[in-house]
Image (tube, rainbow, N blue to C red; front, side, top):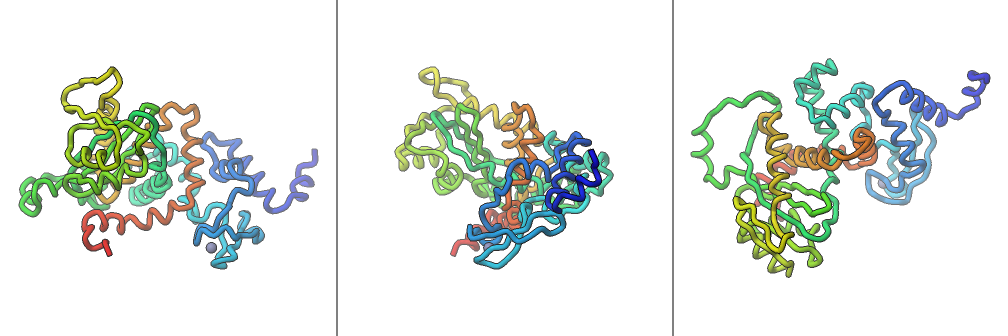
Length: 339
Ligand SMILES: [Zn+2]
């Protein structure tokens, strides 16, 4: 076989595909380019800028197939909007994906990859932004749900994953007790589908129950939860069969109605999140998605490939990452964002 001749006969596009294939041949981590090309031969179906489907091929740029949108006139490629678009040091980024899949701490990752901790932190949230669609699921059958209160943490980038200094009195005086917590909603069905979503500051109300699980549960489901009045009145309004339990008692009705799954998810989350020494509330949704995703790939035979697939396919990841401050502002001051 005359390799040089063979290679010179290839188009630029084929050369870059070959390059990707060879790279993945010599590395244990999935090469994202290859994952993407396996995933979608010509799969780009809409413009990541304006979502229009009126797109057409527009040559090759830096070894990547390019497209142009007829609606907004912008160009893009397979990776536009994904966590890896415009990324430098992409080899290390791929290695890091593996570490994120293990749920490793920043300090360990920074030492292992020989990168400064700020880069590792930024990458972490780019990667986690790829999980923004983790909550897009449909529950079937019996669904358990539970609200959970977590401390609000304004921990910034300055004290990344260090044990926080204790200043016990300084917050309690500024806010009422219940407004010092952020509520999240945890729900799961018996098929192992799980969702964890940020609900609101303070105690949940029917509005935040609707916001967090309203699109996932319907009259077809049977709901089990503790006897929180907001969950009760929400279920009543939606005409969903609802069984309530006292959380501390592990009791079961009719052999199948209980809240044990959701309680055990709560416990696993508590154990898992400890390694981060408290997560900033600003990034809470990313951490919840991270945990839920790890639960999901736990039984997978190729968890890293699964992760890589999500990362190369989510073209809204960069937009989600950029909206972090806005989402945080909405959570902390909902009255300002309602128009
Ligand atoms: Zn467009």
